[in-house]
Structure formats: C-alpha cells, structure tokens
Length: 321
Image 1 (cartoon, rainbow, N blue to C red):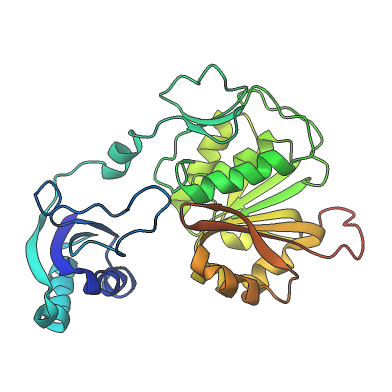
Image 2 (tube, helix red, strand yellow; image 1 turned 180 degrees about the vertical axis):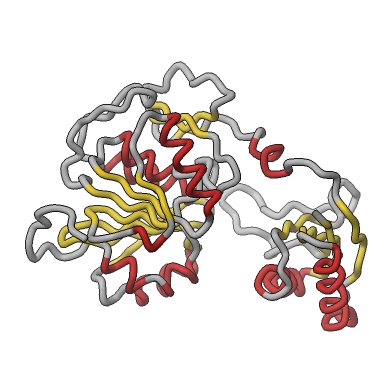
C-alpha cells in the first residue's frame, strides 16, 4: 500500500478528491485540516443551531492510498501538472507499513443505539443493559457498522415499520411473521447490516447483493453470527419482486439504478434509499418519478432517507423468478 499526501486550498479539495477516486485509481481519500493542532486551526461548525461558517478549511491535507507505487506517482504527476499553479502541493509519497488498516479502524467501533431497545454491538463488546434487541456485527472488510447516519436511518425505518413482535435476543432469531415485510432485498449490502436487521425483525426471506465479494462474505459471516438466514450473492442473483427493497449506497448510483430497483418492488411494496445528501433529494425524486412518489422520510447530519411505496394494484401473491 502506498500513500500520497497533498496539500490543497479549499477550492481544489472536491475536484482533486473526485479525480483521485474516479480517474486515478486511488483506493481511498481522506481530508483533514492542514492547520490542525496549530494556532490557525479553525472549527468546521459554528454555534449550535447556526450554519457552518464556511464549507471547509482554508487549507486541507489529502491522503490518498494506492495499491502500487507507480499508480501513486502517476496520480501525483497528473494532479500537480493540472493544479500545481492553483496551489496544490506534494507533501509526501511513500510506502505504508504492512498493517490491516481496515480492521484497525473498525476496532474503534462502539455499540450503536438505533432505538432505545435496539442496538448494534460489535463482537468484542458487551451489549448495553438496556438493549433488548441486539445485532452482533463484525463488518470485516465491508462498509456498514451502524455508525453512519444513513445506516442508522435505514435501521430505524425497519424498527418502526416491521409489522411483527421483535425478537428480544438477536442470537436466537424469532420466526415471527413480518407481515408486509415478508420478502426483502438489500441491494449494496456491505456488511449485511440492513439484511440482518430485516431478518431480526421477522422478514421470512431476505436476499442481500453486492458487487464486492468481500461484502458478500462479510454478510454471510455476520448473518451466521446472528443466527439468521440471509441469501447473499452478487447483484445478478437478485430475482423477482420484493415487499421491501433497501439500497443504502450513493445518490449517483441510485439514479442509475432507478429502473432496476423499481422493477424489484412488488405492488404495495416499499423502496427505501439512503446515501443521499439533503441537496440531492430532488434529483432522486425525479429519477424515480416512474416508480411513484418517492419523498424524504428522515434526516440526520445532512443526509436524507427517501422512501416510496409502489401502488397496490393487486396483492403480491408470493415470490417468483
């Protein structure tokens, strides 16, 4: 793993970050205040209830990770050639120590409260005493720990809409009837957290798909650890229609996937989407105009949960291929 560190004025941060990910093959990009821990450090947010004083720091440090040194060097050369005159500077380029950075980061994960009774708890932590419904989760190499607002909003939706008596012990799944949430699809499952949540709330048949084989494996492992059945695989394994389709990804792929996701929702079924910024909500509503009314259901930290229900022309009799 090789690390490229750049310093950029605020006006370049978004463009350079996008280039690193979309065109220059960076595995990840992080942005920090270049003046952190100095007298010039500036808070990103103002007083409670007030808007942020500015969209970002005056100077930012960008850290990009690459699989090879050649890719890091090519990215540095391309970016400095295009933006060096505008204030982009190279700070460092070198090899990182051979450590499992993903797992080191995830070990900082603490129990997450979804509702007063429902908590997501990593395998290395004891469940809080007030938790009557517990999901044990080790995200492995996939996204989804319950700490991000988009994941919490999806889980809250499940907790509030599942028409069933919630199992009080996530390690012995109840076989309760989940009513309208009988057949569920988690599209872009990551760690499988949403699929497992649906199963814990009583969905009878849960499918989870992702383009990343590591996510499929993480979902299978986490489902086993929570004693629930989740059929995990690649996207082409999602067949038929579902009473609930969950998609916690990002706004751009959600727009591109509108025809596909829409056709997976059964008459009377729900489509629940996250990974959408507040300012992107209108675009999502327009992209799914052919599906029916899709609107904002929940908001948290600048993110929005959007939901829609397919008109119930006829009741969905059961799964079909």
